[in-house]
Length: 340
Image 1 (cartoon, rainbow, N blue to C red):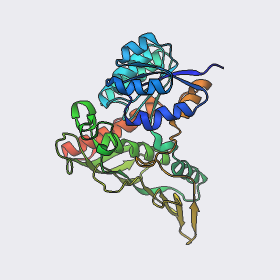
Image 2 (image 1 turned 135 degrees about the horizontal axis):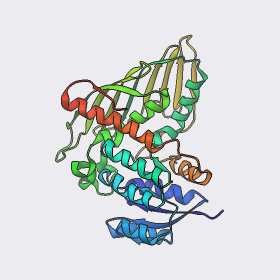
Image 3 (image 1 turned 30 degrees about the vertical axis):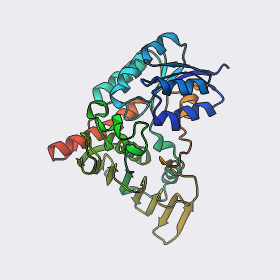
Image 4 (image 1 turned 90 degrees about the vertical axis):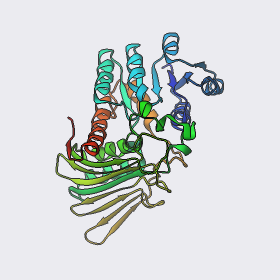
């Protein structure tokens, strides 16, 4: 079987730290093209991987014979480029949030379906070892139903992550559409849906600009969440935590499960009978310490086997709708039903 021909569109930090090295580590992949509006960024990776550099995605799609692309661009370009690629017969792995509106996301899903390609969204929280273990433990049933939960994702902000630092598109609403909620909150909305095998049906939220200067997007949010099966919990997203927090606690009928709170035992289960289970399963990725996300390998496996990705466009849309409802809740100062 020949290697899959892959292009990466957008050569910023998420491409640099996740997509590109994970493609390079996969023996079934050949990186053939890179694209970035800053030519030097694409040229750097093209030289490193003996590929071709482009400064416009349309030229890349027109000239290269591709199997798949990664879309690692500012949020407002996700739908535009993903749809163009799908219409070219190319499988698409798009970063989160998959789009800036539900209408854009639906158009992405339709384009992939119409042109018989896969659309996968980069919700890597599902594939991180503590969350995979938590899913396994919940499936065993001994903890019973998840009654309540709290989940948070916060760090000091994109200044220390983005290749453009304080000048990053993350801080511009016309390019990002949303701030910490789109960057971090959508990850945790997706994670709760995944862990609980449940859908969020109603939210209430404060989505604010509290800590960052010279930005028109949210940098802090605290949200109340209710699921279809009746669980309630809180979700927080922040660009002003001094120390990164990517933890989740599930309060169940017969015990408590803590995820990514302890640096060594990443999953801790405290049962009602007083017993405690410790699981050393591997860390959650952080901006400071990258670990393999698993997203790239799942995407490649999906293409090779002809199996629809588990983190499909439909899944990405459901998680996006949760965040859009939270933003609407904050604006209207009332609880909002999540669009199905």
